[in-house]
Length: 333
Image (cartoon, rainbow, N blue to C red; front, side, top):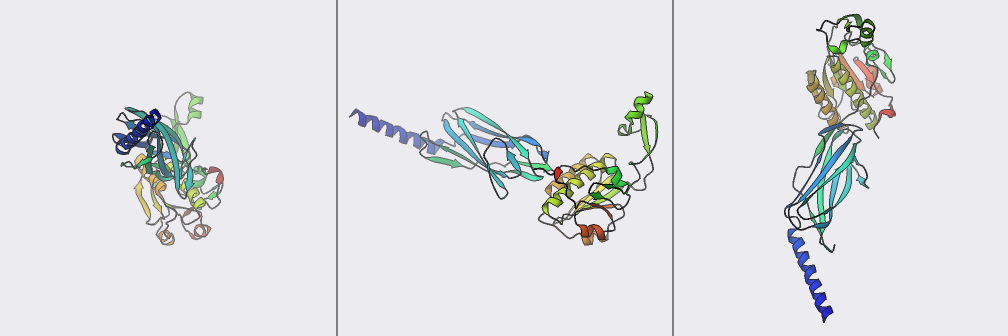
């Protein structure tokens, strides 16, 4: 008789807790996730944070969040699976009543683009693990802009019309500020970036470089995306470095990208302009491209064409940065 009573009491406890979990498990339960930064570069390691706040006395011995993220985001210390362009990550918690849990993931940004969390499902069960319950939280899932890394090359040799590795340029574009004219004492009116530190150290006073006059102080950059994925990604990194170099020397630039629809950034310079160009490079969908031949017909003499297409490089009358020989050492794995 005692065994029967104990069995009935256990059964009653089981069904009561099951009913409570069915009705209350996701009440006053708040979940959010976010990245530590809004933008990063290829190869950077950032943090991804999950926070769960349980504002009731009901505890959860086992609680799981199932995340669907972009495959370009590599979550360290987890056995995630990748299908097509999605990465599936599971995160396990144990949450007490009236408590808050925070988990920080180390995430590596492996590829430029607009990436983030595409979906999240919260899964838990009753105390005995007999029945599972799931819930999709309603909030705007976080995104992060991963900017392209830069493929550095000898910008001075390039702008003189020389060669640097696999990137030849047909014609000379600028005479200023890449070619030094003379050195004189600092007057306080020159930009600090023109200080010649070696000469200043020898003469024990600040000396600055002066430069030859320039006929042109602007350039139009055309980025050709009609090639294989690896070659286009290489061209994008070359373009990123060129934009940074022109901005550093105060040369205005405009950017045209042969995506579909085409992307265009008007002539400008400064940090805001450079940031806008970098964002456009991050947004490129290389699977959607437009023809470049009609664009080249109206190109000016200060136009720089960045292409990995040998045919286009040969027929173009503009200045050409040919990136057709892929340097894989700068690729992000």
